[in-house]
Image (cartoon, rainbow, N blue to C red; front, top):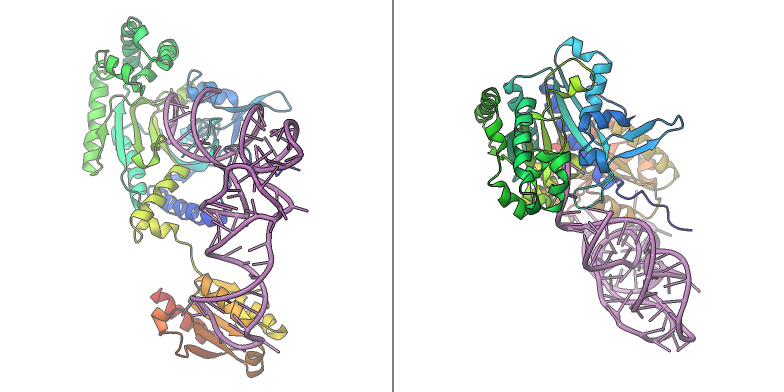
Length: 441
RNA sequence: GCGGGCGUCGCCAAGUGGUUAAGGCAGCGGCUUGUGGCGCCGCUAUUCGGGGGUUCGAAUCCCCUCGCUCGCCCCA
């Protein structure tokens, strides 16, 4: 009998990690709330056509990375590879766009059928925002700023923001015909991947990592030279606003991104710490997408952060600075009290006490083992609790429980008798005592 | 999808054809039937990712397969 395993590239998030996810989510939600961004939850499964039409038939994501299958009604379904298409579909379908601009966020799993490697899984998680109906270039800076400030607040170090302008649709059409004409006359100098893209998706040739292709491109027509005056102004405004916000950025004219729906501003936030999968946040403006999916012509911009990659960065930052924000996020919350208990009556009382103390807001671990006091103290110590609360036959007969401090940095070393008695029927003073100690922690 | 590396207990590992598969950490029990952080003692892999094969004999060699990992591609 072979061991049952999760599917390739599908990863369990275990209890030793989930608190990190929760901490990140809590901080992100707080940023969104303060920016007036509301949550939207859309299905994980959508019709294949949504992504094919939204992301673009010729993209890699649609062409070779989708988790698609036929359901029992022979409909082609796809596990969402990204969030934007679903959000746009939901906004159109539910008439949200008739209610003015929509500032939305989402979080959840995404699926791409790829070979797993560092920072890349088949099921991964994104948290993202989409601003629908907001076409001003100030919105571009605001949206980028939200990502930048969130990452900063999470204590992540060494990030680089790169931006580019892809112009509008006409700009790109003009560029494409110039570029294709030029590149076709140099086709034998291109790398294999780029050669295939000349017809299907020529813009992607620009960000090829192939050295030969890159040096060839030095002589090719440039996208930025095809931008209209309006597009150029828009792009320089975005830069101006980013400077106002003190957000450092680099212009990368080769940044085109792999999804077809982007217009004007495209951006990525990367870290060299992530190896080959360097992008932790990617996004851009998509002014045509809503119309293309059947909605009213509506400008929009958004981004997504990859949570697994973000967590890699937070762990790195925590190593570099064990006292910093990132380290704080990673830290497991220790119990306030560990209840050492033994004997029938004492164990009954301990159960009741644990509930009362938890109701009072304390984090309480109850020892279930009935094993020797020595063993229980050892576990109490390992749990990291500040206090041990001791209940045995003796305490039951006297009606006085014992509260013992386990942290010598607070209450002197072990040889001193750092135990206090408390009345088992009066928990008020006990709780007060413990609450005070938490201020020391 | 393509190329390189790897896969021995929950974790870190030694072992590269020969009778019982080191060790450390963690866990559990004891020394100490009521007091922790130290110490000592004991227990914890019929089995080396899985399946086949070669051999008197395989964790060690061969084939297949699964998974992880690094790079390509792509993206978060």
